[in-house]
Length: 114
Length: 112
Image (cartoon, rainbow over all chains, first blue to last red; front, top):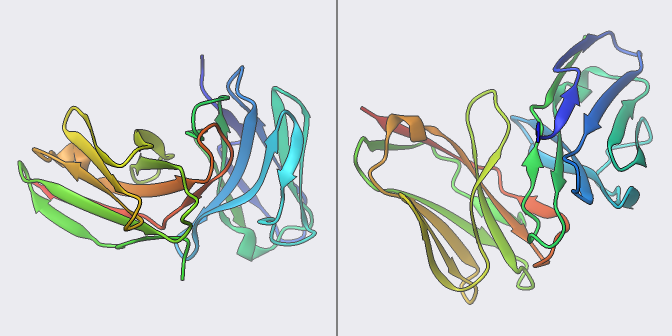
């Protein structure tokens, strides 16, 4: 398997623009997580899905952030409008069933909002 | 108090020494415990997991868990420069799946 695939790897956008990050989890994994990592705040869980259903979105910072998982092989994280403080590395991770929660991370998307 | 706490470091050890990384957690209901390694500019990768009290060994790595003390540690024997990375401790309430809570990580440098 190719692992968790994220796109784009890098994104530079202007403040106020919409940003969409994409993730393809590992086939057969039934959990999908979106994390954000910054030097100041470390690795933060934004939202996670189980069998395509959002389970906990309490980490989503505000209404400008939204996430969807229309099917088992695809998820998006959207920021609209983007702000400079959204600059971070965004990771998608997936977990297989019955494995205690071990997560397999994608390569991440480095987002810079100028 | 953070749910998962780690010494931020940096921790520096000479090549060949034992590196000891520590983690404490606040949720007594935690069931699964993980150590991830993250090289600079890369994504976290799982290196160890432990569910039961005691020690679990895998090659040069040993994870230690003490649920009564709410403490989990990672020992790296015969440290190599390639072990230089940030090590993240993660804790999960479930044994099957679900979300994990991560610590902020400890940065380890192994000096040749």
